[in-house]
Image 1 (spheres, rainbow, N blue to C red):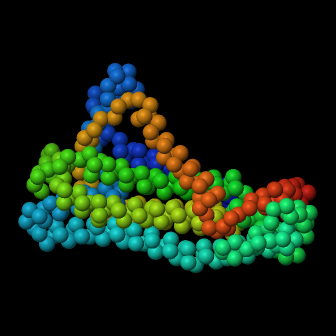
Image 2: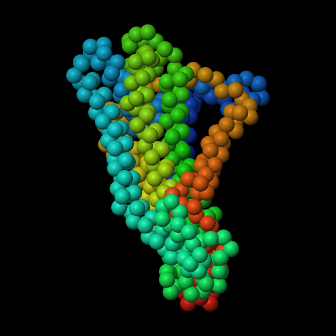
Image 3: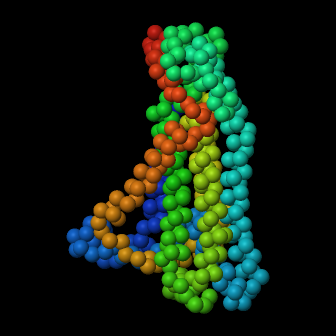
Length: 371
């Protein structure tokens, strides 16, 4: 079960990242001259120039396309009521998905995580009191912590008299390597979503040129396809406040509370299952887009082209820059586990050695459980 759950989580993360990469690929696959590879540009010593491409086919792309199209027509006086309703519905769908994510993670924290944290803290307090033979101090949270030099490893043999060994050794922090690996996968999943928001902010708000009138925002390439030419300052502010800040904020909340939920999991099986459940919450936007987006919205999103107003210079910075997100993610995991986590504040890392020996005995071929 552990391997299956972890495999599902990794497959979903890789699939999500692959789909997003495909969605950001050049739209004109038949033109070999306009879609030169990085290697071909590097050989020529030039920069990578990309053609205008459609928005990603997800809730963000649909909301951006609808908000720009319908708000522009609303301001120009074209069927005011209809375009106002269409823009409002698109934004309400985004806000509903963000609100649903917030609601689910709040309920997870209230009904599951807080109960698990209380159980883990109680069990760890009994462990500390027993293993340190009563030589303990209380931290600011009122939790028992053993005093240096009084840890008696031999006392672990009879630990079941006060608290179950299995319960203690199933606390995620008793196996930091596995726990940090799961936290890293979860954090990368959140970072992938946050990075997508950053990409859209950079593409649509930072590098998109300014135009003076609402009419100049879009130009028509043909009967159905429109090309984004620029934004007025009001449009940029509207997109930032209504579309990009709410999901970015919920990503930060999901990252923090998700890591707390995983660290408070009651056992390693629940640790993996909780990671998969958290990913479902994070990917709720994609599920809603596929489930409820009208067909005409799907078509409009595909036919909304966004130009790239910058060139990517072929070099080490462009090739390795994206890996900075991996470094940020791993740094976050280390900082959270060793400094920021409050499931077991001031954790002493004193259960790992005894639990390692216990788990070896428990999983040995001669163990009653193994047989």
